[in-house]
Image 1 (cartoon, rainbow, N blue to C red):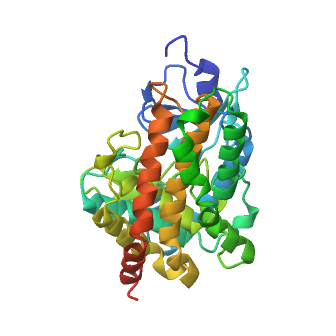
Image 2 (tube, one colour):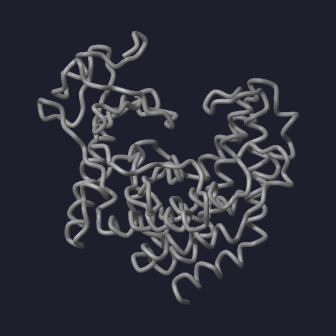
Image 3 (cartoon, helix red, strand yellow):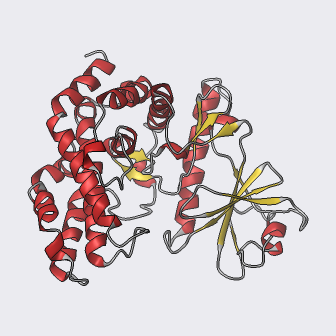
Length: 362
């Protein structure tokens, strides 16, 4: 271990391991520090600046994983392979707090699996949809209201739009003059942005257990078959709408370009990619969802894309204080990219709905 890491001998001993344990850094995450110990245990330092209440995260994880393990056992599956397994400390606690105030947790490493940043085929995208759909279906009976809200209003699109208004009003970096077209685009869609949260308040959409970070890299795939095995990174599991989990996957998975691509001619909403993910998602979750949830899945794809665009734009106005940037205009580039993608979804909303209906045989 290098001297500049937070991982110390005391942390290893807290989990009952020798100071001579084999430890290597696992890359790929952007928030938590992750290590592989003795090639079979995944140790993470929870970033308590991003997540100020790690105890709430662990409460949610314990409840959800226990519930899922029972479901997998009932259907004759392998819970040790299909569900994250939390490994307690030597004292039997779900996490360890070191002398510096760092929070540590451990899960079993799942052998023979790998994660991927992007799909290499529509078949892999289908598998990603199937995995996140199964996550939704298996947790459809879990009392979502008993979970802690890890990040308040994380996917509350009207709140995100108000945050953009606040950033524009304050204009702390004097950048407002550059973004009037983007700001007008966002504010003109206030009514549409409030659709899903409005339906939730009316009771027309049920509150579900949602993952809230349904990117490709949060699924472990079998290294040989490329079949989805396990959904990981449960830090943001909390109450939400199915449309948000579905939509966040579509935002990234059905775009033909990276979210910071500046040539908008390359940024296209690909209906074939959308169809592959939708078919996979609904093959698992379709029977667990209400009619209204099914009808509004395309609106979730639009809302997540639009919402992330507003967040990028607000961060640009605020001086890039949240999202990491490699150059001064990257957040503005990202916002323009996401708004361009959202506009294409608006124009193809009818076809998106047809694909959902076709996937569930309606």
